[in-house]
Length: 476
Image 1: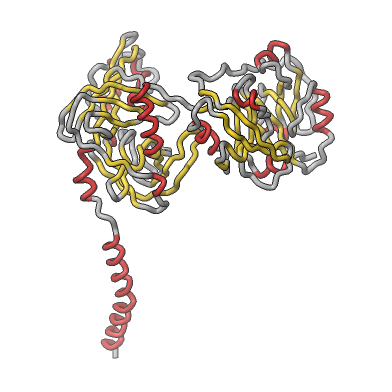
Image 2 (image 1 turned 90 degrees about the horizontal axis):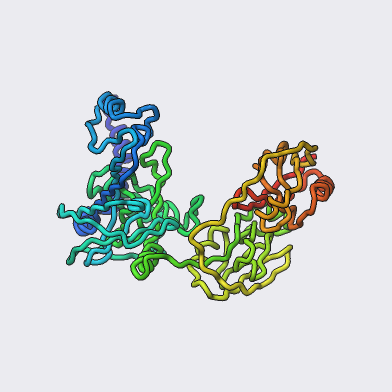
């Protein structure tokens, strides 16, 4: 009886685990084979070594404060089992700083794409090919805004990559990276596409491809391949708390990079469309404060005086919903679309102004190389009572107004309560409230103190060179 029970149990387990085993076999059979990709395309990837001459400063240059001479630094290195490094910095002298990155060949006559942050400010760029040959490279041009650089080596008959179409990528699709993480040449890692069109802080011109491919220092500038062996992106950034891979890596779509490389090759510089506005995301609270039902669009937080936007009639508080016929769903869409517009073109800009739809004709300018000087707000000189949302304000001096191009504003000398919780701080300049400007602190406070509790207001604030609408819920 006992043997029969055991047999029945084994039989039951066999039936229970059989389908799982079969399913596992089917899954294993369906997994992609990256060996062909590695064999066919590994030679198209290069290792890049960059040398930069840096003025001295001792061990502190390596991030080791207090180690101001070679002897202290070498003792530190010995304690941690790190061999002596050549060209160590000494007090007040100069030394060579070296870093590594990756790149890939886009033409058989030696043009190579990589990241701008890999080769920018380099004194010497050395490229090592798959067959171990080494060449000194010339920097054709760099574009810091997209983090793309084009370099050139004097060689012919080189294996070049096949360019793919990143617009056809699908979330969940397998992709692979080849590069030199930590200097380990021709290392392949693989994963899937996690998201597309990802906007990152301070990165307004690139709709990044997010993947979970393992990317580490040294992978920068290397290619992201699809399973067809086509390059769909340049590995550029990672999110990491440790400095190593955490499954959040970001690649520049290859179509963006190729467009940049073509301009760099032709003229050594990039020409972008420019409006001269500051924008921000239209949140639900801000949309409610403007009486809007949708959060689609880019909210204009500021307009530079005499800029193309100013001449075209755009104003702070406008919500841009379409630019040159292209819909603006999120604020991050606008810089890319405007940047890709040829300077000199007159574009039709559809906006919502105080709830009313308008269409403006705006001539697109060319983006300047240098940003405007930041506004430096003075420290408070007087004390006054806070208003209903916790702001203590004072009128600007004529000199401060001059830095604002003559605009009216109110200097924040203290921020407490709801205003402080919303992020407004001392030294900010309040430019308006719900699309209205104010000539004095008294007028602003009278308006804000009349707002009923529970209502959200939009306060336009300038901090440095940036302007931003801050939604604040009135609590009393």
